[in-house]
Image 1 (cartoon, rainbow, N blue to C red):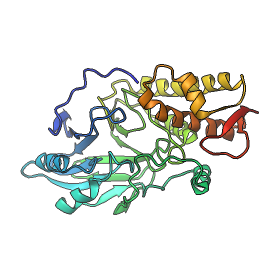
Image 2: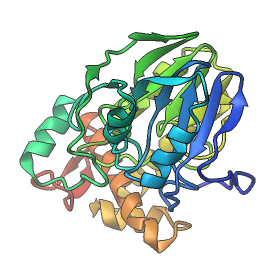
Image 3: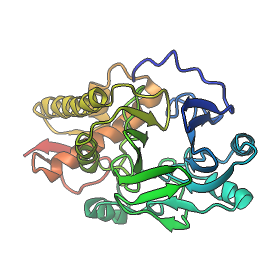
Image 4: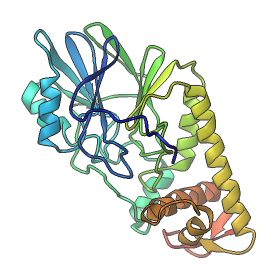
Length: 303
């Protein structure tokens, strides 16, 4: 994780980030959500609400209070189905009558590998998934959503979870949990897929972005450098895993303890899931293989 000590927003108050864009931070701080979930409002009259956030009556009230005279909510867009991003979508829709748009339900966008691992029931995962979420409108990759004075392009960026979307707003991008400035994303199979994560990073690197607005934390002012860091960070984790496996077979849990030496104990579980994602990715590249059946606690060895 990276320091972000200067990001201390007033919770529940809509802050103007630039013309046509406001942010409300939800009251759900944690080691995984930083100060809380960022809910964004785009537009001047007909508003798009992006990531309504957790099931919080106080946050629902804050979103509705941010709708000024002459404004209304026309779209509710969910970037992905984690419990800190999507549950408030339906209560908000019930209050304002706007449709809920997303890539799909909690299993949408999974790769065939992850579908097989999920079906095995041996992979664990499922942390913080909003399994009840159903959108009114399904968004496709590169689909354009237009409102009163604004346009967004949905970019399917699986990795953190299969149904993850980033939203291009001109040369700005709302990157949700794929790219954040204060931490790297959790990738926990079978919902998360590191192979897809790296592909999504490469997809974002093809564009010249001015700024990223993430799902948690402060805006990212140098998007290209941050994407380069994310790719380098994942490559360095892969190299560290292979270094340890060169000494002999090992499990994701043991490897995490050996590699994430600066990580607080409370976050080693998440680190273990990230290592498991790397091991599955390396298995797909035929670089490593499980000793016996592939499951969450399996030992892996270099091929």
